[in-house]
Image (cartoon, rainbow, N blue to C red; front, side, top):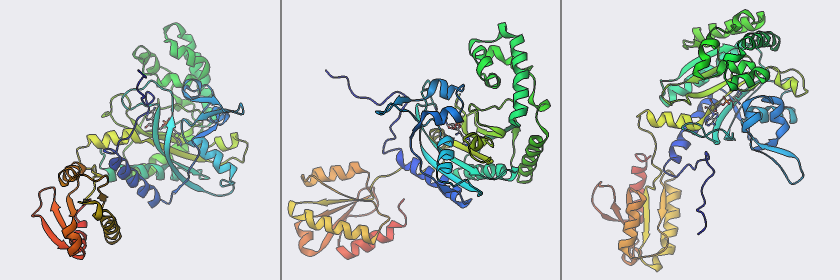
Length: 427
Ligand code: HAM
């Protein structure tokens, strides 16, 4: 027997019972982003592998171990995008959008990382991301954070905590990196295998290690405060002041280093303890050097991305009433073959007159009993039956399926009016 076909591990279907929540959540995010003047950009899912190597960094976990990379039929190395920033910068440069102008963009879509799947961590996941270009000051950093805070309020999420840090300029970071290498190298026999590897490739990431045996050593490691450059410190002070003035609470986390190489200065994460180990719902920061690194004129930039699966999981836990029902409102039943065409036509009239109604027409024939059974299973609020009598009299028989009132036969126009009045109460 053939093996049953299944989705790839870590890649999930979002079933119709869940899509109303996804759509609602995406709609709320979109409304907030648009209220701040951000505009959507749609980007390819596949890009040249080199794009990610050169931006995210070839010694990061993402590029080293997690990308879905393959050669296409021309022998060119391509990768499924593991994140959206690189593609966004590429598009901005390719279409001349970054030259001498400011730009505020957002995108949504699937990202791919070959990580070990667990609750909240998937191989295909969805991000909504935001990128702002051409703005060097801490005002835009604060704007992004205010925008996310507004979104949490709108979604009714109170459990997210803001952590911020500054990674300084590349020069300050290089000096800090040297200090870290010297420190951890002096303790090389005490550090775990993963950190030993990172010592040579990406020493800042050792600070991010969750390995219990590393925690004491990490706590005593050199701190960045003494290495940060003057301009970055002033920038960070500016951000802290703006957040304080706006009443946004934050925690300073000097160990927040992020897993992508392109960051400079501000980095931030919104985290929760309600999602187990994968508690970062939204994360980002400045990447002032990336555009120049791609060979163009230096352009300051900052952005963030939020993981949709984690956001949805939080909403599901939140206990508030959420729009979870995508069932039809009305189920139309043609009781005989001769009724099919008139029912289909009347369904069009109804959709035209009451666009908010979800009208499902029974297809596939069958007895009245079997049609009623389907109507009930559909979750519809009202069944509407049209048989030979109704056809002859120009009426419809309206049967409440969810316990509100008596069955009644109405002229067709009156039935449209009756449903129109109730459409305001359906969701
Ligand atoms: P990131 O921290 O790699 O940053 O991902 C951002 C968010 O995507 C995470 O906080 C998390 O919510 C979600 N996420 C990441 N990996 C997974 C996964 N395997 N399963 C489920 N959710 C996941 C970036 O991607 C940067 N491009 C953000 C950014 C934009 N920085 C500047 N601009």
